[in-house]
Image (cartoon, rainbow, N blue to C red):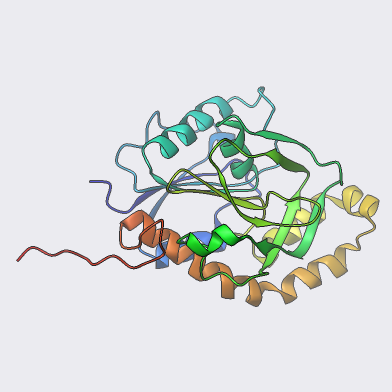
Length: 253
């Protein structure tokens, strides 16, 4: 039995599980964080895990020089094949795509940074995590690359004008998000401080950007905290992945 063990892959020390981790724990999951960027080895299988969470990072998903990407893509394929509940964020979502034959490249529109809206697609109505999400939820964007082609069989769940592949589901229980739901203001402050030239090139004022993001933290939490709780419920088997309906908990007589 997998119980509630959840494998969290931290690809970059500046993008940890943060608020998302708190929300997943609230939902009943027990997190085990592995940091391959610090030399920690990834497990070869997901045996014993109820869920997999893959976080973001500054790396290029197509960079085969990153030593752990091959093993991570292998885990993502196993997660989809064996229907282990999976939540992949930004770089994680891009790796979920490349692991299954989709395509990722540097965005032709340039980096997408700051608070934005995405639009739910019709398929979201039939998805356990997305059905209760507002039609145009607030999200936090910080990515340089875009998903240009989803893997065969993937279901698009949210889109935007310039970067259409914002959220998708692959198989029964693997979700990818191009945007970030884990961030808090201190994490964003670190990103802002480390990316001055990029912000300058985009015409973004660092202080104004951080203030705008901070002002939306309550709105982010209002949508994405219950989203994380629903993911935990899918992992624990108390929420049907396809319908969004609560499943009865069977107890021995």
